[in-house]
Length: 407
Figure 1 (cartoon, helix red, strand yellow):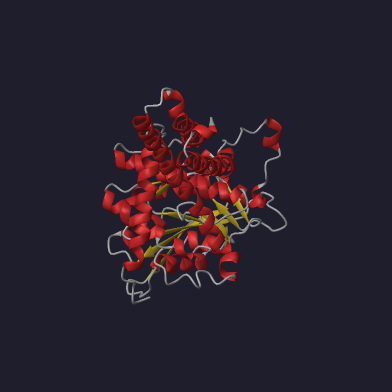
Figure 2: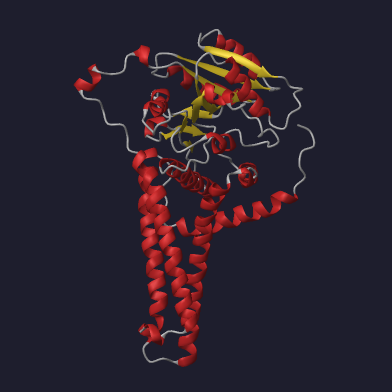
């Protein structure tokens, strides 16, 4: 049978096999590792309830929120931070040069909540990333060693958000104490195709960075749901060396500081935060461009791992399509009497794609169901083609964009 196929068909089938094997490896190693961590925390038994950690053993936490013209979001979501079931924590809101009524609103709320603390970034601050400056000021103002970061447009999934994230610091990760805990930041589910695209992109990226961290290759986190120790932050100079990038207050910092032994993952349903998604394609593309602009700053090993997945995925799609075209052309030219035999290479390739699609659907929809984000099955092939094209276009255009001259 193999000898009946042309050399082109044999080569294409080998390419399909090699790319398919790597794709299976990627999903079964990294994505499955993250999926296992999404299991909800089982309810405590009576014996476990009696042996719960005493409040004195639960370290204090400083929740840092940076707000730039976020008055409405603070009105909508800030209160959820003051209903956390955790014995000792403070909320530090850094007013990042807001020109709306953010300051007035925060000063009013400070009278209502004694654990709300305020600081600010001067409006005239001349830096590329005031977000990094705001986080630094928030960290300096923090009275606790554990810093938990989120955004002004974020709402914790439950009153157990802080306690769930803090469990990551107590987990054994090796010889080194845990200093960084990565969480998942979801986006609110809304109707529309754009929201479905955002949901899929966020889900896949989240499972990827969480899964790689579980497997000992942490490379990024999201500022919507990220914790690290104040001692680690200042011991290594905070954002020193990262100040010439407008973005990267979360992923570049984690890429620089995270190791296989000092990083833990917490992505149970109660540990999630929910953020407001972009409502227009242009706004989402701008947000994505900012995130992609820091990718060249990643470590070489990280860029290699991240590049292999979309590369093998693209080659797999291209090889399958080419194999179908070649088989169809050969059949039309030769008029071979056994159409099944002639189409067999294409059938094998398409069967491999179908098996991969079924595996994707299962692995992606398990956490989607547990987290309450949009599930997807039929649109997976579309998103898999569209998203890499968007990413590639942005990465080609980014070097041509003018760089900021003031920082």
